[in-house]
Image 1 (cartoon, rainbow, N blue to C red):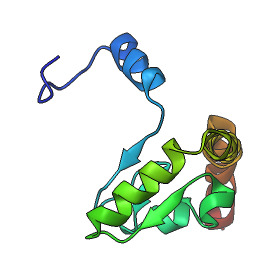
Image 2: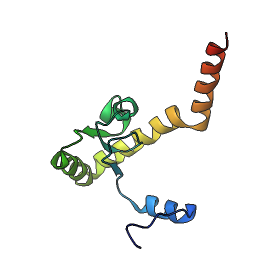
Image 3: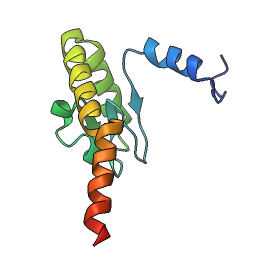
Length: 112
């Protein structure tokens, strides 16, 4: 695979994502990572960091990012715990049902 290739095939994307042990998004913009930088929006997603299933490091600190990734990869029980918490948080806060409910409440409150 060419690392510069943009993948659009959903089956291939699913294959790649399910093969990963950990996700990271060292971005300056919003995302849904397990290990992320403190970019705008990320602290909102991972409000309680480990309790939300993730870790946040400083944007410009590649050493902290590498250490956070290594800490998770070197501790399988902790990785499994973060995995479960991240999945629970995603299902509760970002599922279609949860987003639909938030949208409904927003529309009803702002309707009047």
